[in-house]
Amino acid sequence: MATAITRTNPKTGKTERPYRDKQGQFVLGDPAFGSDLHHRKNAVLTTEYDEALRLVRNGFSIRMSAGDGTPPSFISARKLTLTEVDELSGDDIPAEGPLTPFSRDDLMHDLRKALVAEAAMIARWGSYEAAEAFLGFPSSDDAGEPYADADASKIDLSRFRSTPLIEASYDWAFQTGKPEAFRPETWDDLGSLMDGASVGTINTRSPMGDLESPLRVTIGTAFARWKFEFETRSPLSVRELAYLAQMNEVAARNALAKAGIKGRGGVVNSVARQWLGRRQKFVPTRPNLAPAQV
Image 1 (cartoon, rainbow, N blue to C red):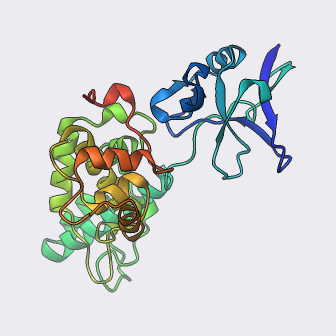
Image 2: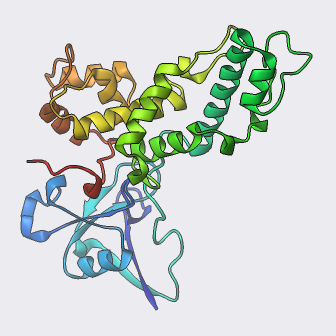
Image 3: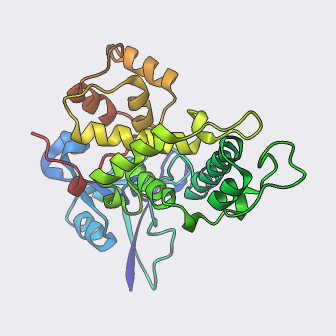
């Protein structure tokens, strides 16, 4: 037998279940904190459903969600329903928290397009033979410009050093998968990639030239998170804060202004940390990967 934790929302009638945050953790509140149990600093976090259930049985509140996009809320233990079932379903135990801004497949599609654009530039500045050696297949004879009609899905990403680099950047940026794979040398390699990347030709454009593309957002967020955690003396730009908060730059600038924070010249780390802590889509760095905050 197993135990399902549910609650019927008295206003909507929808069934709510334990909510996982973007780090895959259940968020619980210790009743010892009284009215302050909902503050993030007082949260009790666990990735284990059985541990969350044990805490609920001991009177802890837990964040619950109907899974319909509405914000989760703390529900006290006495308002929850514990039901014995033969087996828990996938609905009873959420597999993961909210999705990242875009999928890994979207990112890899962007990377393929960027590689096509690089090949087009190699064909322009070097030779068609060099471009074919780089990309793995030749440009079509029917293409008006090098690789203008290339099928990016044909690219074998396992041939490229940039693939594991971008995958590690995605995990670090959005704290999913294996973010620990993003190391100091990854930061350096990513910087070199940015410095040497091409925006493509007139007819073969690279996502590297689009600040809002999944590829650029991933790289920008990875850099911003590293700076946020390990270069704490450096102020963060509005764009870096926007990346971390999963907002566009205009919305971030307006939100900063509303909070009385001036973005010109950058925002110091301590202020940025407080501001980000109030943003709904901000994903904190996993505690074991972030330096201790004094």
